[in-house]
Image 1 (cartoon, rainbow over the protein chains, first blue to last red):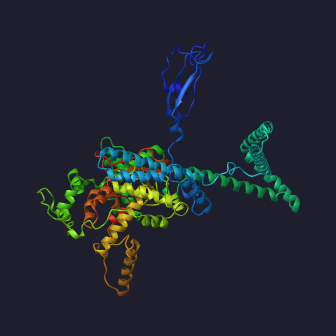
Image 2 (tube, rainbow over the protein chains, first blue to last red):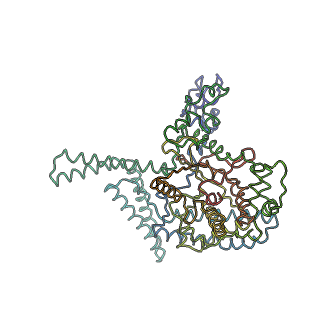
Length: 328
Length: 307
């Protein structure tokens, strides 16, 4: 739908093009996005820069669209800190202790303990409440940042493997090593920093990164090509008929797609099967008695009617063997 | 109903109604709530039995409150304090995969600190102990996430959900260490709990009663004797416990005044959010004078012990 016409009433003689007579420009959005638009309008001609069209602005509630609500309770497969992996626990502990010292948490709690003996004074109690919550938040921040840093999650870990990706990543690592070596050497020797060499290496790295980005955009096709090549090689090696291998490749592609789809779904839902409540059931209109339905302002979506469920609903459940007395 | 916004608002409304079920009882009135949670009301009148009832107090209610009378040597026998050893054991015994802490401080953090940074764990304990000893309730403890389990799996009727509260791991430790352990152990040693009470007790687990019932049936079938059994299911019992009443009643077992105050503060200051695959709900509900909610809730350590 057109955002401008749906949200503001535009006077008849308004034009958006300098030689026109009405508004010919617009912003179109789905109804979902349209609901999240806070304000919109037409700017005057030549506002901010010269143009024969008027500017159109919309202000969207980004937080509402992107769903800023966090799912803090992460199920164990999505946590970085796992007690079954000693290496992560060790680096987590080291990180916590380092930050503990930096933030002087011990000293802060000592001070709070001293303060707690003088809490008869309401002003002191107020500041004590403020500090105890502040330090608690600080500790929470330290723990969660240590969890984030306890293991490195590779950037390209989710990319589909092909020999081309392997080559790109290997070249990138080698280039990064060369740059850091050159920088380090200049630190320990009196020789000046080889700026031109470093710049050329950095440029090559830049190109490599753009290649990697391009690879990620076409990774599916590249993976399919790679699988077909491998199949062809195998066929030649084992002297197999042509019809047998394509079906194997087809199955493999299908399985890979299923795995990647399942990963996306699991990551999006991030919750246990037990706690999924993405829909609820309420008694249908036919389940209410005539008497109930004839009452003025009867709304079967209203909670007062749903709670604790209509009589017929309970009877149906009892017939199905559920203990209906618990509903009463 | 599949529209997330509508599902959220309906569930929140339904839960508010669910937790307001105890509102019809006499104890929830302002007069009785303030009386039962006051030190004077608990000690002078109820525990020592010196109360003079007004005419408007129902006889049944008088009889119920008169059961709180306790000899002075049995009063305040339990200390409202925490120990690091208990906290250490609690973390050791807890499972990493258990969902806890709406603030994302899951058990994994504490379990990792056990070996890698015990000093940091001790400091966390010190802060928690300070909050308990001074009665300053941390802001982090005030958020509860409620997950819903369908009573009939696969058919999520709005009025047939079992709400399970997920609270902070530290608050869970406080509730388990003081109410579920200290209080129950003291009551067991003084034989204040009847033998027929099952659930959360040593050698009297919830499933033991089911096993016993099956055994009775078998024995009577073998002996060909007549047998009648009557099963009653309490509806939403943990969700109807009134903290003010619990605070007064637990005093008769030997709990101190502070424990009751902490329980009342903890339950009445909670802000309840629901958790669905769409994330935590944006809206929440909490105790207000206009729409009061009661209940210690399932999933919290003190609910079973106080019941």
